[in-house]
Length: 160
Image (cartoon, rainbow, N blue to C red):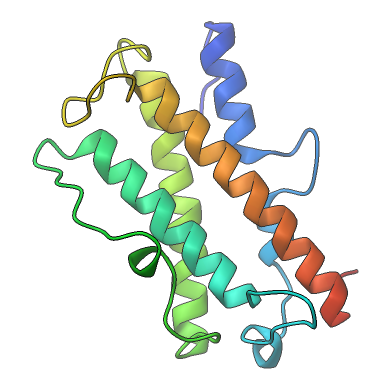
């Protein structure tokens, strides 16, 4: 991915990776043993799978909102944004969720670099629902849940 000469866009692309100020998504999900992906640590509400799948669903929804001219917000909070089971249905489902998160992150970077006006309202949005808001929403949301994922991993004894 080429670096933008626009300092705001360049910073947003860096923020989507979050490698500057804390643990990034890739490190947070790497190396979680399959038998611990659905484990809930004492004092924590969510397993690694629940956090991963929640980030995937929310990020996918925001990307769809920004890129799909026929987007309709029909998900219900919170049920439609969280998986129904604490563990992934299979190792393949875990792997697919990780790949989807990375793919959609790359698509958000491209959107950030190629959208003519980040301050424009997303066509299916209203009011202050701009492209910039959407990118910041994803970065903030994922940073929060990556932090939770690291804390859960520490509590489960699977953080290095």
